[in-house]
Image 1 (cartoon, one colour):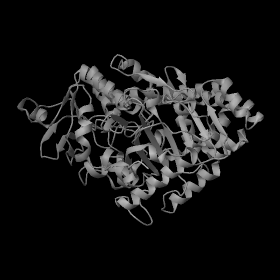
Image 2: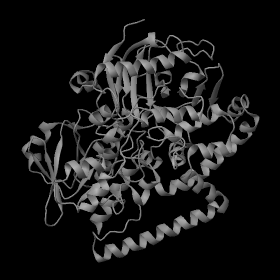
Image 3: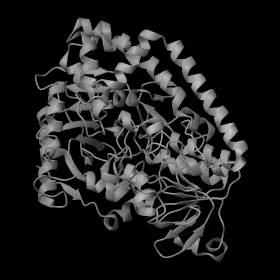
Image 4: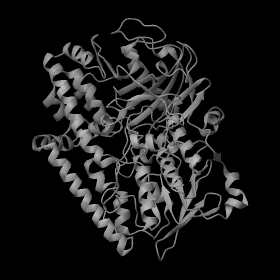
Length: 584
């Protein structure tokens, strides 16, 4: 077996490789803020965190003429949507790894294609091998889907197109909610502003009612069932084939600390299929250059509009007047004060209100609500460099260019929904899943810019791994090695010899995701996406419209509506609210 070179999760070790691949947008460092012309400058707005939502907010604010600075703790922009060259020649999408949810209006309005965004649609989009030698391919080709599903069930093959059509209807309905601010009631405005706000809320509810009527009673009942029911119940009503149900069920649990039997997991399924690529609904794509290219394009748009993007700068605390509850800027970790009447936080609600906000300025009730947010995570990401493609037992040997089975998401470790539930229960008891659920993607099959010729980059998105272990510790190399080998051995069952192809890898457990990207609890959505944490309830009641109890402080990250994924919607919506407030 080829010796495996592991990459430790330490920024000091990673930086020499990754720094060369940081965004080429206009980026300043600590020296930029230290200059006298900037040290005493009063900015119109500051953005805490240079993730894709923070960059999106900055781009819209700068396009509207505001003087904006983005303050990023790490050495590169993008948050979890970054590309890092951890092993020479191999460029990893280190956090997020697929694109579909980025809002079309963001792509269009920020002209991201001109700024370098290139989406690589996948076809087929899904491959599920079974240990018995069978496999299931799915994608945008209806004929392929019918043929593939017919291998397991003629009935399911006929039902699948109707299932897709229904989800598309529901996705169209959800579209009307994604690019707007929830109609939150607020008193933080003038009398004229409150009057306008009331009219806007009435108009929103009228539009929503009209959309509900157009959907029809039968479909509305089915929509409510999807929102409230466990994904297993929904899928069992549609299909009988275990491999098909298990393949579809992964969308209901991926990134969440929940089971296919968890009520409300049907919404998570919908959340993962309501995106699009190049105008085609439900298609996930790779991004040429890795997911950092998304953030890079947004950063270029923001910089072109006049935003200042600053890396290696950590915000220690918000500056807030205790009496008036008005924000006046931020205090950096080196003691520097930066003044601004508006601050947007791209950090999680927990970090924003529990770490960055001074004590005694928020009510006990509000803080209790924030403390009650669910940040549990069962996710581990492993990024690998390999010297050859995996050869799956269920398929014929393929060339270095790859076959249909290598282009999309490869589902491993669960041939049925019950196996997914068993993996979840292991984690619920504090243990890494004995048989992990693995989503494998190989972007280098379509993107030739991220790996040396003949070699490949592989992403493993793995569930379930609890944040705290019943026995062992994620910082213990023995524990980490044991789990990574467990995952590689599982892949060997489907693709013999896979382990011997590994050149090196980087593993991010929930605590690593928290430390590296600031994801509280390792939760990739900035908080659970349950029905009690969506729309008017996200992140908490009374704080869903991006405004907070502190005047001048806004949320613009995935912890706000409409939630997680590389969407850009929270950043865009928050910027619109800021601009509206400034106009009133």
